[in-house]
Image (cartoon, rainbow over all chains, first blue to last red; front, top):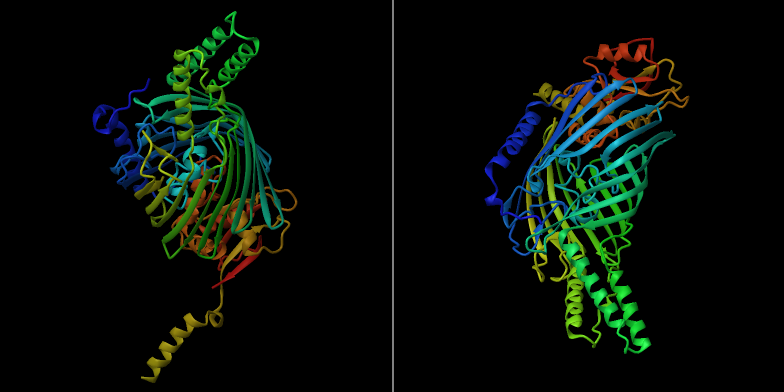
Length: 455
Length: 144
């Protein structure tokens, strides 16, 4: 079981090399505005870094980028939400063959190095390319760039739709094929991809915080991007045949379900019990068995979005749909709309986003008391209470209103200031935040300031 | 006094009515083998943003850029794509750090652009109007 430490208790020795590396990355970015010719050099080293500070005053709900983030942004000032650094090496092996490696450290993940990209790329003619290995997941419009702060307008992609669904699967291990074609006034990019992914998932509502591992296998999807001169339109659909979530706590939960189901079957086998009652208990036992691993499913992600540069205006919009095919997590719909206007090097913007769970109430009718065995009924009541709590914490509905500005201070550096108000529908809905217990103060006023560089 | 007034009026006029002083400053040029006679700004944008990667005959488009910091490059992107250097960097960062594309090849000088476009099938670049090379095909002229 993961032991969750307070930020001030962390050993200094674990932090300083990563922090020093991050500062060095930012310094490199500020010092090196020019990059070598990316096409003619066989080896290209590049990187990105964001030094981000946030402030909020909510003690009951702490912002996170995703449920992989071990350390949320605590009340007060924190560098954990947005601070990230990445290094990338692209090596051209042959005229049409290249290899790419990209590693990332995040403050919210205690600067543990993560491999985000590691693939071989083969170009076939001018139109097609295949990548084999690990690549960033292309589930939503901005999901593959969510860690590269310099590449997008806001401090981070809108949390209500990216915090839970998109950022949870940062990479895919498999292959993709890209096909480009020009059709008069527009170009088309078709990207088909498949593979699997796995990572950590933290349940913040347990003490200590429960570290689970998810495995998402047999992922396959298609993304279609149509690029006009000033507008890019993108649609994608991704499915996975199996999503599993496992942890010591979930194992205990499954064990409890098995015990209760076993108890029901034992009662049903009593010789004096009328046959209809015994059959009912057996059916109840089977239903309770089916509650095992309630987070497992076959998720699908759908995204339709656009990104437009019209004169000085920047408009970004996206609609997303998620279906976990898990009775506990359910389905959700969401969207974002962002508008910015550029004056010189400064682009103020405003953004709204919402994600709403449409279903997801698991029918726990089988967890009703039997009236035959008080001890068994007590265990059933405990499991029912655990399910009720799990269903509440699985509701990631949230909305946000954001205002801010991006200031391109240099050609490779941008400062961003942003204010977000993130809300959940009620104090009993945790949304996309780290919540230890319900109810919460369901409104977080989050101020962010960040320096974003590439080099 | 009248001279000063006329001078001020002329300077002001040069800002208020640029058409009267119009002159070509930038020319987009392609290799003579490219089967295109004219491009508009939108098409040039798509080519230099690498949204369009082939010419109508299937030849690979090979755009060439001047280095960042070059006034000609800044003017080209500002006037053709409407994007600032920072916006362009962000655009290429998005593609480069996701493995979805790299910016065009860069060369150091206009003279190198001229040589590259002249010698490379499918090549396209932008040069100052003063570059007068009959081996290059002009497909778009931008006037100040």
